[in-house]
Length: 148
Image (tube, rainbow, N blue to C red; front, side, top):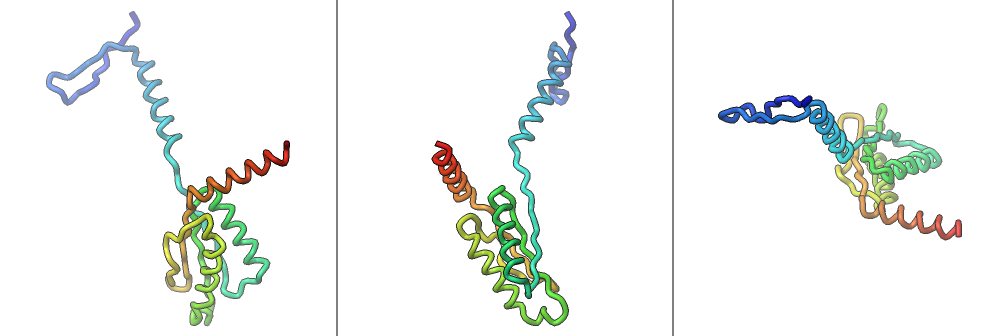
C-alpha cells in the first residue's frame, strides 16, 4: 500500500506506532514549522550614533532616520559618543537624547532611559504599535483621497 510504520510516542509503554505515509508526514511537519517561523517576529535593534557637538542639519537627518526605523517597527538604540574632555559635560548628550525623545514621543516610548556607560551615553526607544498603525491608516486614507 506504500505506507510506513512510524513510531509516534517512544516513551509510552508499550511504544505507540502509526501506519502512515512518512514522506507526507515529514512534509506537513516542515510546513507547520515554516508557518510558525512566519508568525514569529524578530525584533531588530537599530543603532544611531550622535556626537555632543552635532550640527543642526546632521541632527535632523539622523532624527528622521530614527523616525523611519521606528515606523518600520524596529527598536532604536541612540548612542552619544564623547571624546576627550566632552565626557565632563554629560548634560550636552542628555539634551540631545531628550530632544530626540521629544520628537519621537508620538510614535515611540523610552524603553531605557539615558545612561552613561564609559564614554558613551545610550538610550533605547521602542515603537508604539498603536500609534504607528494610526499613522499608517492616516497616510493610506490621504493617498486614497489624492488618487480619487
